[in-house]
Length: 378
Image (cartoon, rainbow, N blue to C red; front, side):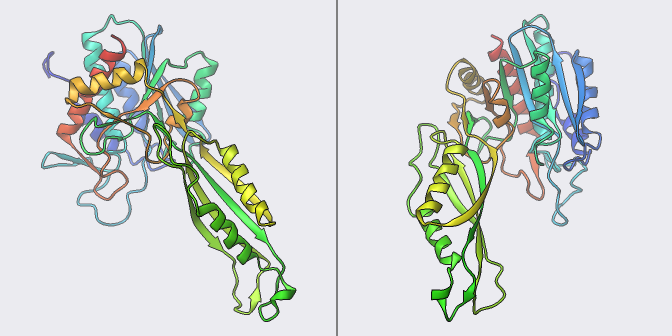
């Protein structure tokens, strides 16, 4: 490669894909990435929490401190339907195939290529660039980004801003910058009644009827109408079970499972109280357990978001929309510490059979990431 030729993300993307790092296995992926970063002058820390391998790498010691966050773990490839081996990193007709090509080994490789070009042209720039790469994003997310951030905080390494490289583009590269995410919580409800013979309902208390009324109360009206940057909160009944094998017995209990995706008008605590109120309004005897995957968060438009918009406009020739849709990501943990946004490849094939990314798009993403660094350090 000549001195003026841009760094190519393809070889690193292929090398990462060839590591079958299905959560929680690392399978050598972080060693591949570390080997690419050390020659660029990055100080690398391999951090193991539980059975999860993570990598924190930093170039420079001063501020401002920009962090790129991502993950090398992938979901299982599935058994059938792949035209090529899911861990071969094959290129066919200008398209890179493999589990992680889109989500998000390709994105990591693009960032490394972009920062390689940026450092070559800006070796004396102020500030620091770091990478926070976890092996626990597709899994429980207990021993990955959240633990690395705690380690970083103890060492005074929290960045001034962070970009998560999830494949957030919808149709064309850079058409969306995610500036927040909805919160997610699941409620497991057990409602108690009195068992009895269905021919003598006056001698029993049917918990199914009461639970149906509770669910109707919760779903009959929208929780809200949305907010400036978020769509409306949604509550979905995702499970209903009584475990009854007899057709003439009123059961003693009934169970429901609810998933709520909520905007910045609510917290998991306020929505938990909303559920309690609906249950108490029906005079229910119940137990409820709530699991919170993450609270909603928003990075308000400001210098960091404006820098990302300018980078997209310069590199991709379009003005991105600011969006908060989709599921959760590790950005929910980073938002507790610093402004965070998400920008990456087109996510059309993530988690699918024949996951792929056009090689040209991968190279364009590398150019975009270089421009992001130029803008945030301008």
